[in-house]
Length: 141
Length: 141
DNA sequence: AATAAACCTATTATAGAACTCGGAATAACG
DNA sequence: CGTTATTCCGAGTTCTATAATAGGTTTATT
Image (cartoon, each protein chain N blue to C red):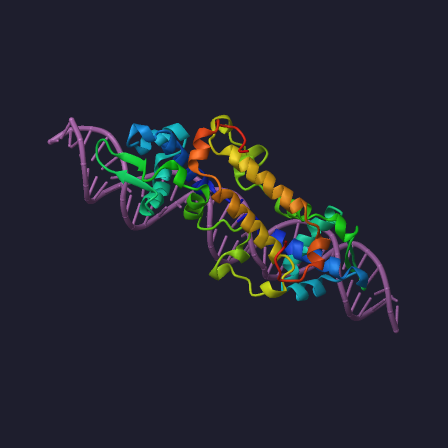
């Protein structure tokens, strides 16, 4: 599994917010109900997005979340990397700890690098606006 | 992480065997030493490959493993799917248990399906012969 | 008989995933 | 000012998969 519920939920929430951008601030309760996900769990995920200025959250009555920028400027890749930490298909490609010291003689690392680049280019080429406007449940070009 | 050590090691072993195809049967001990991996762990992984006729193993003195077919006929995808179970980037795409009942209304599933197809086509387009002949540690076109 | 190998089944340790819980701070409204 | 609705914060829990180990059995060669 490349992407866990964290990244998946985060993406869905961002698209949800993109679709309801016009309604001003949206409370977590509403998003969670619409997406069919536990409020408490979503809370954890959204806090990451807020801390990184992808979302703005406001407390108190009438509060809620909203995007801080136009929907076209959020790439799927940015959201996933933030919530997942890494999108590398294998741990050898993760900077630091996962790094393999056999890389120089490895027969497969080149293939993994190419795959990694490919995945990166794909997710960076799609914005949440793209996802919001395409019909739900449909394939993506 | 899309691919765990299981799939990674399996691939490396298959390429190793492709490179030493001419030497007849290769004992696990030798492969493990060359690849810097625990013998016992590799044993588990190779047993899967043998059970699925990707490798032939022979016991006793002089025994060892070898490919059952020409190296060009093994795709990276086949090996990974066998050892990993699935290459789906998200659990929603896994048949059965992981299947999501919200798929029809999901804003992101189309994107995941496209990514899945893309990854599949990539790994199916590379054979272990390709990996064996390209310089080690180098990128893959 | 000795040796070298694959084969088989089970166990364990660790980490991460996926939540859950309880409360504190904050903002609006009457 | 008090009530209510919300985000924010930090721990705690449960479950599962990964990554390995361990020990023994069978089979083939010399």
